[in-house]
Length: 336
Image 1 (cartoon, rainbow, N blue to C red):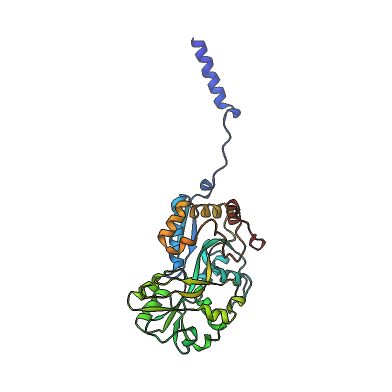
Image 2 (tube, one colour):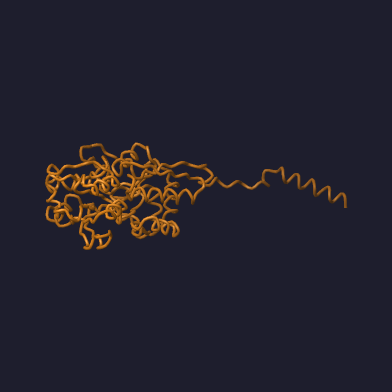
């Protein structure tokens, strides 16, 4: 008996030392390989929808993956995010489709640089242009803004660029007195009557407009008819007509027809494919989408079916892989 036990002991020792007895280790997972990768996520001005989205998306991704630490960053908005992404100063950011398209083609106002190192991940929400005035104002259309003070957004923001684009097109840019103010401050100065109107390019309802409407009656000015009559949509095909329903804001008794841009989730071209893929997987999970809608009503347009709606620049390879996996047909102009 002792002899048998001794033989068994020797056999176990030999097997434990043999190379063939040790199972081959699996390659490290992305989670193990990355070891708490820190990502900077560019949002927008305080009070803007960009900020709400960036903060919530960063939180969802960070909670989903222990190896990712996504840090939201405030910014001037769309155009600033585009430029910073392009030089790899951010990893992720929100950019308007119009700015992404024009920037890629060297057609941003006063800026002929080509921002070609930015890639799209997905559509987030439609961003309607909203021109806000006091209800007792005599301003009924954009053409009534001659010599009026209009806040158009932070310098370099998508809001400011869209305002300049629109007002230049209809021949009003040099006839209005523009001020570069963020949404929250613009709302405050409308209430204190320091400005006559303010412009936002965000999903509705917008917190800054809600804040203004809580202090005094407001109106939204329709922009669709003048856009249609002047050929604005022909010159800028990434814009489309949209309706803001009545009662979106307190005292807004009628629906308003305006135009919208699409907000895109974008990434630096240098972001690894696997990281982008996993970020998309977290946000577009059932739980992720539910959390987004709870954070902001504008997120109700997010779905796997609408993933590439309004996308105007090539997809990131990680995004291409994700959306093809959802069964979407990817147009040739969106291929990386």
